Image 1: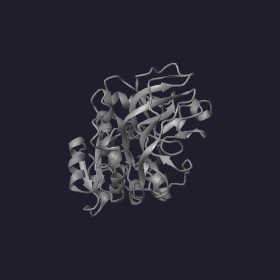
Image 2: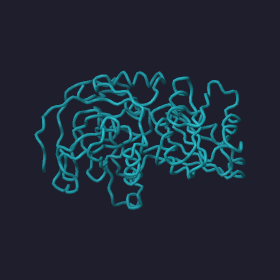
Image 3: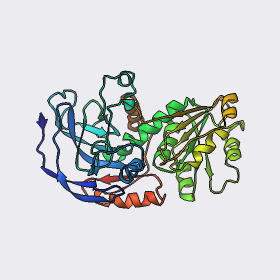
Image 4: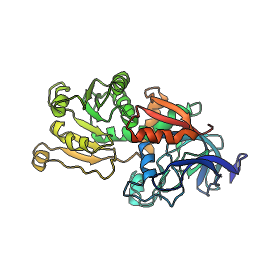
Length: 354
C-alpha cells in the first residue's frame, strides 16, 4: 500500500445517536483496503440526505452508530491499496454517495451501479466525508482534473450528478421546457444551470423573493412562487409557449404535496422525474388521466460513473457555478438547523480544516 505521511487522528462530525446532534470530535484515521483509496477531504458539500441519515427517518438502515455523514467530498488522494493502479498519490478525487459496488452483478454490468444490492453509501452505510480523511472504493471515486477549485466542485459530486442524471432521464430535448420543483434549493439551483447548459428552458417553482432572485439569476426563464399562486397548474401551463405544459418535471422538493400536483401540469407524454425523498411521502396520480395522456412517472437515483464524468465536464467548462456558502466543519450542526427550518437557499460547503 502506498501512502503519504498521515496523522493517526483527525477532526470529524460524528452522529452518536438517532436524531443527533452531530458532535465535533477527534477520531482515528482509517487505512484503505486493497481496492480502496484514502482521500484527504478538503471540502464537503452538505446534502439534505445527510439530515435524513442523522434523523433516521428513511426506510433504509444506516451503519451502526456512530456515523460520520457526508457524501460530497473533494480532496487529494493520500493513500491507496495494493490493488489500485489507476490513481496516483496526489491526484484530486471526489467521494460520492455511491462509495462502492460489486461491479459484477447484472446492475453493475449495465451501468446501474447504484442499484447494486451490495452498494456502499457514503455517510450512510459507511462513514462519509464530514471528516478530514475518508475512504472509498477506487473504482467509484470521481476523477477530478488537476487545478480544479475543490470548494466549488464539491456539490457537483452528489447534487450535480443527481440532477444531471434526472434531466437525462426526463428525455427533455434542447428547446423544450422542464419544470424544476424546489428550484431554489441546493439541488434545484444546480438543475437550472444544467438545464440551461443543455439548451432546455427551465420553469423554476419555489417560494420567497431570495429564491426567486437566485433562480432567475441562474438562468430560469420563469419563476412561480407556489405560496402566491392561486392555481399552480394553470400558472405552470401558462409559462410554456403553447400553454400545454412542460415536457418534463424534475421533483427535488422535500415535501410531499408537489409530487401530487406535477402530473396535472405536464403536457401529454410528459415525463415526471422524482428525485427528492420526503420522509414517509407517497406519490399518486389519476389512472385515467395518466393513461389517456400517456404520462410517464419515473424515479432517478444518482448517476453512474459515466454520468459523473459528464457532469464534471460541464463544471470544468465553466457552465455550472454552484451557489454555495462556506463554513467550517465545526459549524455543521447549524446547517442542519437551517434545513429543519427550510431556510436553505443554494448549497453549504464545509471546510474540513476549520
